[in-house]
Image (tube, rainbow, N blue to C red; front, side, top):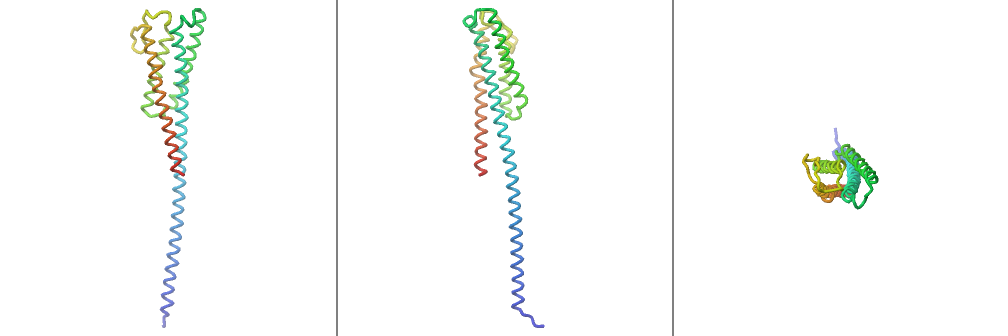
Amino acid sequence: MNIDWLQFITTILTSGLISAFLTGFWLNGRTEKIKAQLQEKLYEFQTKFSWFHQKQADTIAEIYSLLSKYEQSLKELVKFKKHRNRLCKDEENYQARIIEYERRCRENDINLSDAFNEKEIFFTDANIKLINETIKKMQSCLASFSFSDLGKSGNYEFINPETNEQISADAIFEISNKLLFIEIPKAKQTLKDEFHNILSTENSNKLRGK
């Protein structure tokens, strides 16, 4: 039997090339499929991560707004109590205005407390502690000015809700000023920094995804 060795070798080489080509084509297709799947998973992750960041930023903005409203209503109540002799000399009008100031404070306290309790999952442990402590101090401040007749005189004693000790009206005003002009602004600045940090992180992620 005569074998055409040239044809035989050519056939083998051709078959090998075709096989290599088909194998390469399959691998390339498989690689592209895997790449597409990874891209899909990455997009899904980025979308979920982006949603969380957006929700977190919205929540911080909401709590910041509610904290500011509560802060403002407390300032109005404290100011009116402190300067009642100058701002209101009529007893009937005084009582009506105090009731309205206290109503606003209590409404803002409920709104802030409820919102924060529902959404504290979006905050860090440190900020949860900070905001809870701030709210508690604001509630104590409200209690001090709601159940006392401060403003008529600064000489008599009053029970401090935090310590259950007697303190003067002047001491209560000093505590409230520290809260309103140092501690609450500090808490608000912390929220503001966290808000901008989230926006910076989100923008960086978007740039990486391009």
